[in-house]
Length: 97
Image (cartoon, rainbow, N blue to C red):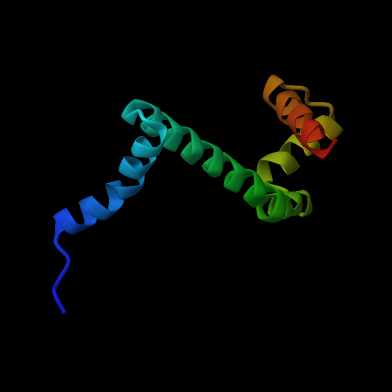
């Protein structure tokens, strides 16, 4: 069995582009079509990944509070209204609602 060389890979990797260019009649159009399809497929996979996996894990964030959030809530409850605590509290409210 012969080992693959880099030129074998390059030839097999470019075959789709060359066949598409021959079918479309334009190499530039073939490259643009491949790039467009690649971007669309990537965006579609990212969307599906977000909907099926990431959204579930992001929903778990509501069960955990960081020390900064607890400190900000304690400051607001004690009547200490500094700008940082108010900003953090409004961010927490925005995330929850």
